[in-house]
Length: 112
Image (tube, rainbow, N blue to C red; front, side):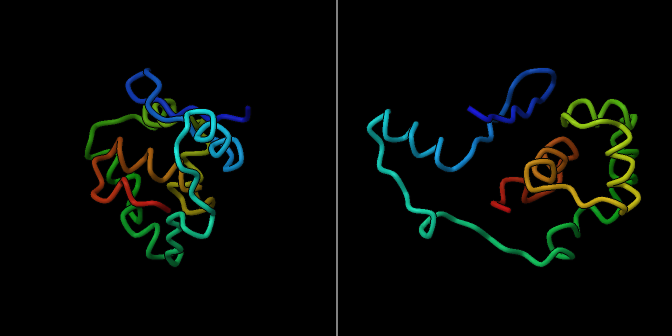
């Protein structure tokens, strides 16, 4: 299985896996299998999607977090977080949700 583990406070919090593997797990558990078309796939515009992170560095500093601390908690390198903060890189949905969770940004559970 190709699983990405997202940790919080050093403990595993979420597991992200490919859709086909997710459906196989549902089938093995005897659960109904949603089709990809019935799954929630919100497609927000990039500027809307990242609006809460327009001042990511400010949010991080307001929480008193060092860039290294937040990056390691989210599961990325400090240099990659620096690129996200500077606007040179766009984080994927899993990283956005993890950053939102760690920084207390409202709407962190949004499917994006």
